[in-house]
Length: 377
Image 1 (cartoon, helix red, strand yellow):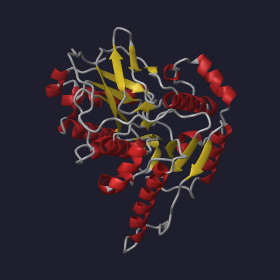
Image 2 (cartoon, one colour; image 1 turned 90 degrees about the vertical axis):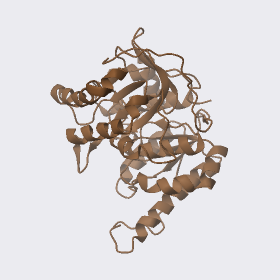
Image 3 (cartoon, rainbow, N blue to C red; image 1 turned 30 degrees about the horizontal axis):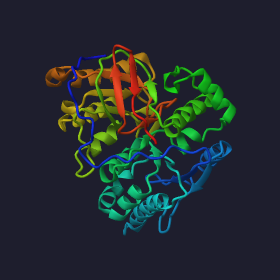
Image 4 (tube, rainbow, N blue to C red; image 1 turned 45 degrees about the vertical axis):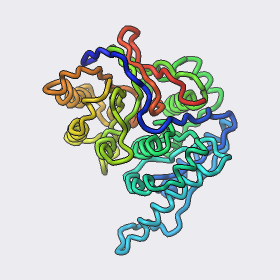
């Protein structure tokens, strides 16, 4: 805990569209897989097949929704047609997933750097907005899928989930079973509070699935998330990948009203080197950009994910020092909102699934960060 905040009467309703809360995931759910950013079906077929087999073994039906007309492996061509085709195909996948009443959930296969290409079309596509409102479904993804979360909430009211993707989290060689998930859940009544020191594939896959299914399947508050000591603001939880939030903040029509919200931020891997996290300079730049937009003047609290690639105590201290220096010194120090570090969200293993836009509580008296509102009905 780095600060103090005295919370008065706050209106927790969103000033934008009325929220749409999706239905809980049924036991035999039909799950659509889409790829709204990176198009890597042909690059990681084994991981994708393993994730489909895993979900099928748990009783779910899985349908891959993938259109690639006109796309090309080499998009650096003079006329740019493959890029335009990719944008059209990704939008078509979204429409197909939300127009089909048989789908209960939409799972994004992976993140990737091209998600922002869809923003102008997402903003203008009134037909897609109508489809989402008339056929609301669970949608899950993280990293650059931050852009889709923001767009759907702002343009349709749909509440979505920041959680694991098939290729990166559910496609490991280890295979969870109903028995292993039940055993894990019985040992960890609130899966998000489990110790994050184990890294074996079986444990991580069970963790990812138990946290995900708890968020999607139970029409009740999720309860406690990883703990620390801090004061007790309540606000709607929103945010995403640090660099994507910095890049997306301020875009008309999809930027949220941050007043009274609890912002969550998590950091991805470095570009071109998946073994390392974002360089400290890039982290500092992103936090400064968000501050320059006035976001930290509005929020009620901040939750920061355990940073990818910062594996030593010294490295994590340097990462924390960026936030401390920019938010707890100088002008912003007067706001004194609580900051919780090293939560297992986003680019971490294990990963907790967060319901976007749900009410969350940071409570110092009870020593907890909790989701206090059901994310499904």
